[in-house]
Length: 241
Image 1: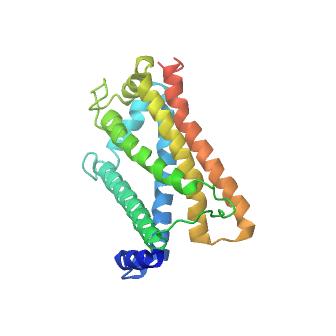
Image 2 (image 1 turned 180 degrees about the vertical axis):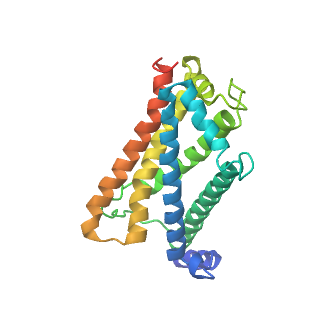
Image 3 (image 1 turned 90 degrees about the vertical axis):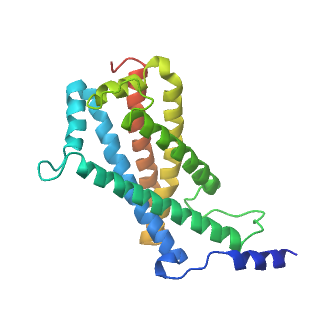
């Protein structure tokens, strides 16, 4: 019965039609797009830290992003190019993950009773990555409505980026801060495994690099989580007003 089920599932499995639709090609695409997203996350984290320099410096930083490339380029055009590039990278990352997951399930419809994780891989890495990704997608939607489009933010004045950050993490809006911190925890786990997995895909599973990769992945995850968390916590507890 199981063998017939496996055969039927294998017929329904997505079939690779080119080098970039093979499992290896998809893993490389997911790794490269993931690296681009990590670079953006680190840059975004560094930008957020301008809030500690005060309203004038934070708003000047936000204005610089909107006027990047002027007068050669129209207002905000360079920023939109970056946004579209990030959307494309995220789409490739998610699409690659979905296709690889479907193929994995189709190839092995009956789960292993026990699977020993590879060195450096968490025993619950797959579940953490999937559920963490779902949390991050929900958070991203809220984050765009809150601090990008200001739909749910009390500060509607676009140039006042400092005021928007202070308003969204004010003490009376503590559920937003809690949600933000939970999303950061999910991001940390995602980065911890994702950076490790990306290096394994791009550089290969060289044992002499394995421990270094684990250390780098953990360091990146901790720096990003702490770097992002310090802003809402400082606003909530009155260190930034």
